[in-house]
Length: 278
Ligand code: LER
Ligand code: MN
Image 1: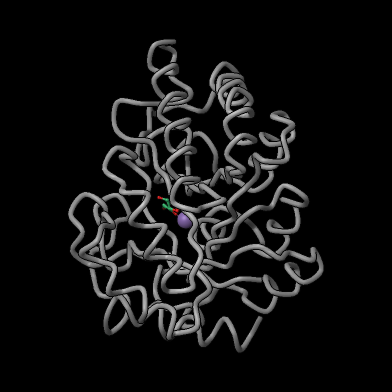
Image 2: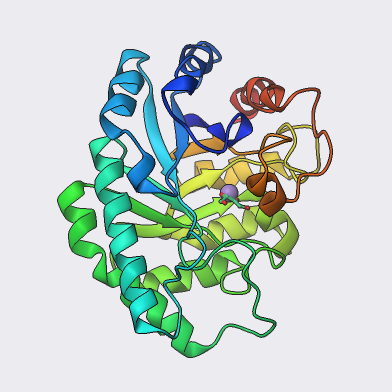
């Protein structure tokens, strides 16, 4: 297993002004960083690749769907633009040296139409991810789709549904990102839910129940680690939390108070806990 940290802990965007974080992240024992990939046009893939390599790290990317786009929209032009957007994200991730894009890449976080998902939306998501097959193969990238809790999406809330979606897509490069924070809200049992993802598991966000430091809350870490070992999971365990003043991003994540003495202590204390208990 490899250990990563999402830079949302420090910043909503990531550019050269944040490269000084990388040696500190490496020194703390992380194998990689997870970087935002929301507006691919604003990502300097070459500079990121060099900085990641210089610091002997790897990178994964976290994508959310920007406002105005949706893979499940009933407007075919919106779906087409979303497909193009995701294709660009895949290409940019590969240029930066990343092999994985993870996140709720179906509709914008917080989009809640006040009804349940319908079968047309499900079929459109399947079609969208199937259509990305060539771009994923050509760029050697895997897409890990993240179920979110009910307050952030109506489309995909459980591990079981996420696994069923990937089963329908039928491409091993399209799998599931399992986030323990969301699972703690939606699942009867976090560890069993993780097991249910099965062979579709491609990425894990190791988050405490309050998005604070892993090990300081009530996520069933022994259970989760036992299941990951049983599944022979050898992918990333990425700590994700959000700085306390990231504007729109803090609002989307609903962070309204300090969750730890400092946001970065969530990363640096969190990795000690995860490594000691894996
Ligand atoms: C959002 O709650 C989340 O978990 C992230 O991985 C993507 O926004
Ligand atoms: Mn997450």
